[in-house]
Length: 585
Image 1 (cartoon, rainbow, N blue to C red):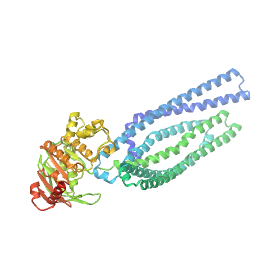
Image 2 (cartoon, helix red, strand yellow; image 1 turned 30 degrees about the vertical axis):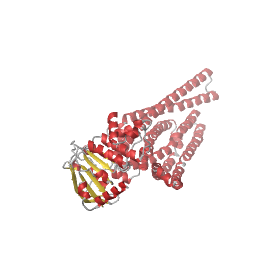
Image 3 (cartoon, helix red, strand yellow; image 1 turned 180 degrees about the horizontal axis):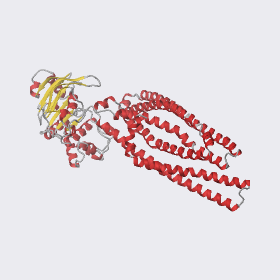
Image 4 (cartoon, one colour; image 1 turned 135 degrees about the vertical axis):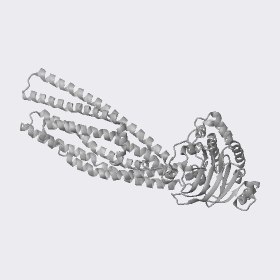
C-alpha cells in the first residue's frame, strides 16, 4: 500500500463527500440488518402458531402482515441508501480519475525532451489511460466495497453476538482461514499484475508505432513480419494475463466454500441449541442463516477488492515513477524580461546524455538582433542541435549561451520560448483543421492573419484549392498534406506568432526551388527586425543571410558572408558549385 499513499491528497480533497458516503453506508447497513430480524420474527410467529402457543388467527395474520410490510420498507430503504452510497463513492472516484489524469498530463508537459527520447509513446499513453483506470477502481469500487464490508461486519456480527454468542463464534470460524488465504493470494496477484501492465505497455507502444509508420510498413511490404511480431507479443501478454486470472479464479470458489461451511455450522449448531433449549426461537436460527448469507457477498468481495488494490498499487507505482521524475530543464527565474534577439555561443560543447554522442565542440558565434544566420553542414554535423539549444530544449554543461547578454538559464523560460518561432525539420501537424494548425502559433489570430501567414509561407493557393479550404481537417500527423505542404503550414504557424527569434530547421527541403525562393523573399520582408537562424543543406537558402557558418563534425570550419565563402576554398564553395551545376542541368 506504500505506492497508493500518493492518493491521500485526493482523499483529503474530497473528504467531505467520502465522510458523507461513510454515513450513508452505515444507514444502509442498519436498514439491511432489520429485514432478517423481521423474517426471524415471522418464523417465530409461525412456529408459535403451529405449536398452539398462539391461537388468535387475527393476531397471527396482523403480525405477519406487519412484518411483511416492515421487511419491504426496510429493504426499499436499504436499497435507496445503497444507491446513494454508490453515487457518492463512484462519483468521487471519477473526480479523482479526472484530477490524476490532469496531473499526469501536466507532468508530461513539464518533462524535458530527453525524457521523451528515453520513453516510448505507447507506454506514456498506457500509464495515463489503463494505469489510471486501475487506480480508479481502487479509489471507487474497492473503497466502497471495503467500507460496506467493514460496516456490515461490525453491525451484523455485533448483533449476532448479542443474540447468540456461541452460534456466532461457529458461524465466523472460517473467516481466519479466509484472511490467510487472501493474504497469500494477494502477494501472487501483485507480482502478476505488475507484469501484466508492463506487457500491456509493450503492446500499446508496438501498436502505436505500427500505426504511425503504416506507410513505411506498406511500402516495404512487411505486413506479415509485423503481424508475426505482434502475434508473438500478444501471445506473451495473453500468457501473463492467464497467469493472473488463474490466481484470481481461486478467490470466489474459496469464498463460496467457506460461506457454505458457515451455513452448515449454523444449521447444525443452531439446530442443536434450539433442540436443547439454549435458543428459544427457531426464528433466531433462520435469522442467522440470512445474516451468514448476507455476509457471503462482502466476504466474496474481499478477494475482488484485494485483487483491485494489488493491481492499483502496481499501476500507481508505474505512475509514481513519472510523477516523481524531475524535468531536466527548469524555470529558474520568475521575473519577466522581454527578449530582443541577440544570440551568442561562447566556446560551447554539447554531448547528448542518452547516446553519449558529442554534437558540438567549442562552438562560438554571435548573432545581433535583426540579423540572419545560416548554418550549413553535412548530416549529423550538429546543425539542429544549435537550434534546440537556443530554445533551451537541452541545457549545456560546457560553454555558455547568452541571449541579450544574459546566460540562457537566467532568462525566464516562458519569455524565452514565447519569443521563438520554431519550424522543426520534421514538420508535425495536429489532427485539426489547417486553420487551427496555423493558429497554434497564435490562438486568437483572425482569419485575415491566418491567410496572410499562409500567403507568406506560399501555401495559400494550395489551401484554397481544397474543397473545404482552411477548414480542411488533416489526418494524424498531417498525413492529408504532401511533405512540402506540411512544411509550409508549419512555417505559417511560426510566422503568425510574430516572434523575436525565428528558427528554421531545414524546413524547405521538400519544396521546389521556385517555391523556396518565394518563401525566402517573403521571410526577408517580415523578418527585417527579427533574429533569424536558418539551417539548410541548400546554398540558395543561405546566400542572403548576414552571416553563414559551416559545421563539420560539430565544429565551425568556415564562417562569413556568401560572397566571402564562395571566394575561399572549402565545403561551402564546393557545395555551391555542385548545386549550381545541378540547377543548370
